[in-house]
Amino acid sequence: MSGIVGSRLNSRGSGLVGSLGTDGQALTSSGAGTGMVFEAAGGFAVGDITGATDLAAIPDNDDELVISDGGSLKRIDYKYLAPFNTLGGCFTHSNQHTITDATYVKILLSSTVFNRGLTFGSNKITIPAGGDGDYYCSAFCDFNTYAYGSLGYATTAIFVNGSGVKYASIDFRKASDDYNSRNAHVPFDGVLNDLNATDYIEVFVYLGMDQAESTYRAVNGTMITLFKINND
Image 1 (cartoon, rainbow, N blue to C red):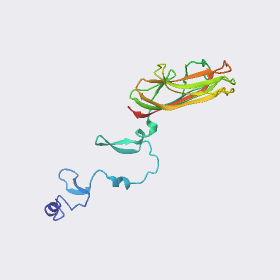
Image 2: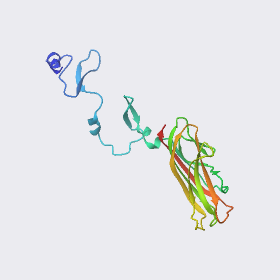
Image 3: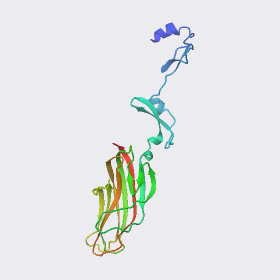
Image 4: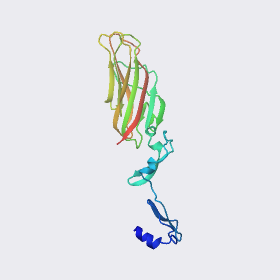
């Protein structure tokens, strides 16, 4: 092909094709009736990436990247790829002192630290439309009875859809020879998998008395953080 181009089209270096191109160039035209020229071929290769200036920083939200979407090249803003763009939120409640002995009691979540796309209200967190997937969950409860020897055990539990069945829980149980227990910090960390739109999450606690009885049974503070880690 190069011999044909050289002898038939470019032999004088003039006319519709002005000169021979070099390796990596393509024959292009800017429109009907205009001369054709050799220019750098479109698209990019690995060398274009490795040879580019190193950003050396976290990209801005509106920095753009190119991806292949089913074989079609498309651009996408960095903000859609960054973890902080995923569905998530952090919700809290301060002192709740109406904790019945040996009964699962719902924590009345009341405040929002941040919320990115989840639905929060009526003391529960609801997965929105399009939010199906797996979610990392971290919850923390601060139990206190204000009476030495009164705290036997305490449980932090995550309920899904209020079914009365614990989705997951973790508890604290004092040593049998510990007669001074009155408070405990009980955390929960885990993955809530296969959540779907309209599913809702609640925090429940369970507190049991021991040697001493206390009329004051409280959770001084609760925090739950939830964010999506995987699509269904």
